Length: 394
Ligand code: PLP
Image 1 (cartoon, rainbow, N blue to C red):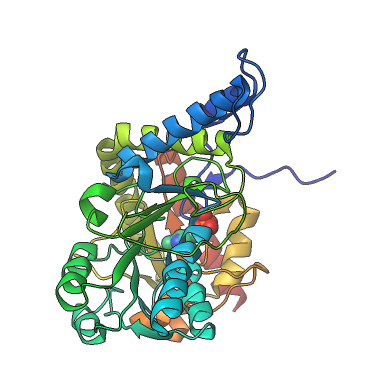
Image 2: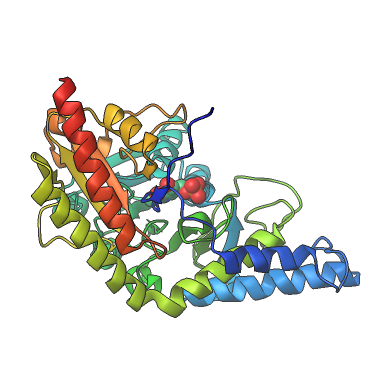
């Protein structure tokens, strides 16, 4: 007889958040409407007009969520594409116009930004990578030193995907405006968007990205806000959709799903953040109290997203622990994983100066709007049991 499927305790919201039922219903309604088939939004007949209306209504909602004008919102296939478009789009124009480009980013960026910077380097740009402190916060003095009249784009995340540490985007914008006014600021807000008011925390940035699947929307949809003053070369060439910035027929149902998810997030942001942070703190205290050798990776007092808890478990191999936890249905993550699913040493923890031995036991718990007290209780009991069992084997 096959083994019964374990009860699932889902604590991996930063990897992808479960699709919210209201989002699934709104997306299904796009295609199953009594109003008839859905056309291509660029067309002129009624089904096309309906598609265009839905797309533009969704754009209005995304713009309102980001505190921007609808005209600056570009729908993308997610956070990765948005980061590529932001970084490589402006680098391409700078290389073409000035024959040089400089990208400033940090040592803790998501691969979507790091690899875009690397691709920019291959195309001829110079790249500068800023260090972070022990909490993973970017060094603003190093930023000030890195900025010059040659800087093209400063690409720094609003909050880190592994640790949840919130970055000082407003200070970054101020530094760039005073020292390198020609440069653009791109803020990767994919992790911040479910929790922070983007208009408040990243309102000064020239480009800001988000991704639907991190906040209860569908996978494969995102948005990049691109301020009017930014001239960027598109990454995808074709029919000139999205005001020539991103060709390809738009995913209307995806855009509706993104807009619906954003509406749900903004309707409940404060209460959800307070509730989830309380659960996260209980999980953290419980782990530290019950499991010997559990260290919170981010020092106390640092601004961290409400759903994130990053710990390192001394003397335990995270791959073995993740397998043991997965067997029991505890869904967490080891931090950064590559496409093969294998865990790589975390560049984020390395940049923070975390001891590599300790980093080998890194675990990321990310809670979300569906997390309950029962999830926390179950995680505490299963994790303490699994760590004890692994230590017995060693
Ligand atoms: N940026 C950050 C900070 C992320 O956490 C992620 C996803 O993990 C991305 C970008 C990429 O987003 P997507 O999965 O939508 O391509």
